Image (cartoon, rainbow, N blue to C red):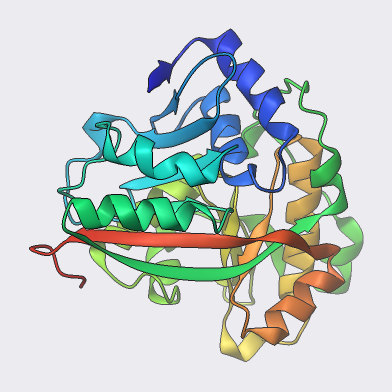
Length: 302
């Protein structure tokens, strides 16, 4: 595999990946953030260049120091020939098989190669799926857009009509100080490693919330290093009041203004959330969201 660290080549890759959306969306979103400051210190590997067949995004070595941190030890993968992924994964040092880690991708056919490579390394695999939801504009992305990744501080969020109608609620940037609140209400979190990950997401990527009457977030949403929108949650007292819809509408408007790609995933059994995001303009993609959590037998899941 070849390390792709030239800015011109990374931009060319970004444009090329747009032609394979939605299957390439995980990797496409990761490359977006890499091209716009690389706040999570990720790196890009391809099997060949410029005519690549496989792309793997992984954290740089200095990031992967905790063998149990599967929130940080994440690989995003896309292949034009998924059936050949086993050969690449087994015969290269791209993946640290001695750690607990996860692979995320939007191609079910990657699974066979991942499981075969993991078996050869005596690594266990847990596979989960979700429904991938995208908007119409994500399928019509202008991949040549090189807009600056604007910070929240540089962008106002005026909405005078909403503020005047609901004086006790305020749309705002989600502050890092509320990372614990997000962690406590994230089903995949609720531990120290997830808390560290959430802090980085809120600090370095767009995150929004609705502040309630006490000045504390009652609804919020964040983004991960692959441009996936997630961790969306409303406190029970404020559910079905329209707060989450208002947060999402303004959050999506901001992302579009900054030309930041976005998408999300919902568990298939969560019919309420699927209906909710469809009302926001999302629709179910032609492929699914996939996650393979891998761990050596001496590192059992916690």
